[in-house]
Length: 237
Ligand code: SAH
Image (cartoon, protein in one colour):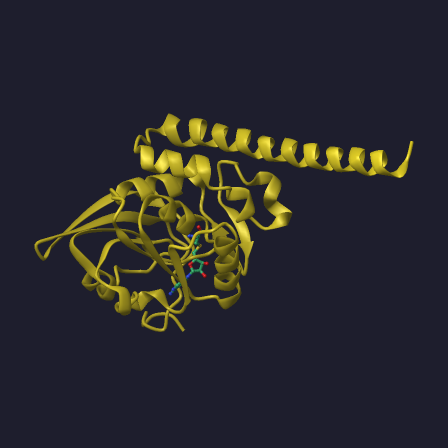
């Protein structure tokens, strides 16, 4: 064999291995959406389409990548976690998102939830208190072409005044009470989902709706999120 065909064969093998890997992830993702999301009653096509599309495994650190499409949260470093796929689905569906919406997320973490939001709405603003996580999420989101997501390092308890009001706010860390600043930054007709409760205890996922300055609160389900860390929360050190 001359040198050229050997190189060509090597290249072909590499390309076909990469393609096999890619179709394996796509198959796993399809199974995840069918068995964990649709089978549990999530019907919003915006949500299921986004979850079929976003490559969750690229947001999961390499050590845990093989488990990316499992029915559980996973570690992302710094003692934080990427949420269970079903939790992402239920929270996203509860926000009743529309294409033109401007959404605030508190707790960027891996950036996966921000990507799901970015598939559905026009503008996503996301705040993360741990700089290394914010930087990592920002670079993955940029690599994948999510130019409609803006990531900020900061304390999300205070929201993001500069871009308020928001049509929807998603909080993915648990404060002991609903931060008033976030309620204030919801626009008229705005929706927010937030897991509320004390650290180490089961929390309640609450849906908040602002209708003509009335605040409606509906408990949705018990859940367990990492605590919100903030100097604005008096009982924390
Ligand atoms: N939505 C994420 C999962 C978030 S885990 C994802 O898709 O991967 C919760 C995140 O909230 C953690 O990364 C944690 O560092 C962050 N967090 C905790 N307190 C915060 C605060 N006050 N402001 C912003 N982020 C906070």
